[in-house]
Image (cartoon, rainbow, N blue to C red):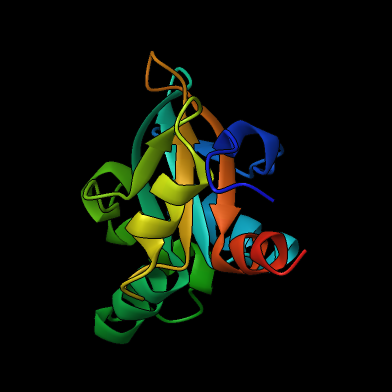
Length: 137
């Protein structure tokens, strides 16, 4: 267990993500069906943002639902993914070390880091739980 180990050896490579043109209802479905808290948003594979379950709760809290309108219809009427997503993301490059991921996550403001290749394409994710498991080996 070396902190100099490349993060690419620890990351999960199957990341649930959506394209920037997706509807907010698609984000909601992914959040609930995959039981994740955040959905990375990509544009042709390049990471451009993230939408969280908290973002959707905020939209629904402020939204005025029309008569007979479903949650998905309300979300889709409320705006585009590009307007809702956060673009201030915590990332590491796939060639960086476990130690660098720990540094980015240690202050507790985020629970995961997104792993990017040299072209800013999303290639993985590492959670605080992944790091804890690794450090306890």
